[in-house]
Amino acid sequence: MNDTTRESDQIMRAAKHSLVVQREGGTHRPGDSIGAGSAAAKRKNWIKRLKYFLGAMVTIFVSASLAGIVLNGIGFTGVMMTALAVMAAAYVFSNYPKVKTPKRAELAKGDPQQMVARTELWLEAQRPMLPPPAAKIVDDLGVQLDALGLQLQTVDANHPASREVRELVGEYIPETIDNYRKVPEHLRNQDHAGKTADQRLTDSLTKLSGEVDRVTRRLAEGALDDLAIKDRYLEYRYGGDELIEDMSGKSN
Image 1: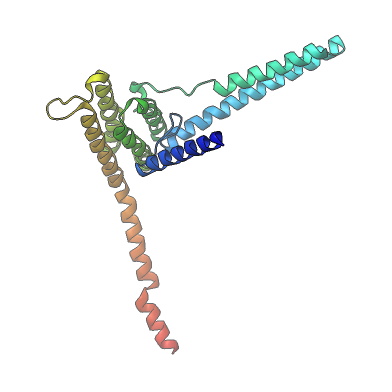
Image 2: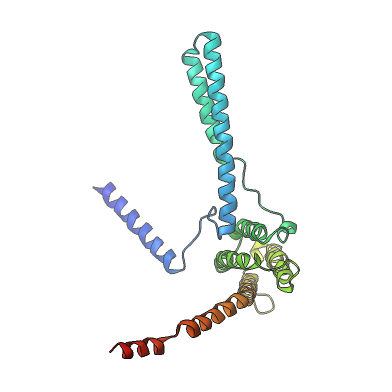
């Protein structure tokens, strides 16, 4: 009875903790992806691991079969060795190869999809070292970078906005986080010139998040204008409520 009561209390405490976390905006495990770009890179890595594992399985079973033919059976020892080889392959390829965290110098390279995926992976690697408010902004940046990457796919690489994005993503965001990490951990909560390092990081990331959103909106203006023009054309071509009312009146 006491054990049951104790387990019930533990479950209630865990539920309360989960509720508090959700009210505060949720939490992310270290392996969670902050955006579609990094999630796609991890998915690609898992597919690679699966191919390696299947290749290892073929090699193991072909080897076991050949050994059985040559030796007229592999016996209990051979079966156990085959099973151990399968388990070893499962362990190795469920953990390796690891998803490579991009270096800071690589963030702004490649096409928009590659740039977004690299930056998201890099931000995920930094997230555990950041204070909770800053980590939450990093999570939001993942969604923003996905939207920005989609806009960049239709923009010429030499467009001023494209160069601005590469500077923003490849320099300002990582530089801000790197500068924070240079501050010794025991000094990050101490006030310096009116703010703590934690507060300055959160404020800076908030500004950068707003800038990413501004650039995305600016790049989307052309598509929004095209949609508005199309809407006006369709209204002119097929009419609106007035035409429908007019037709209804004639039918009566």
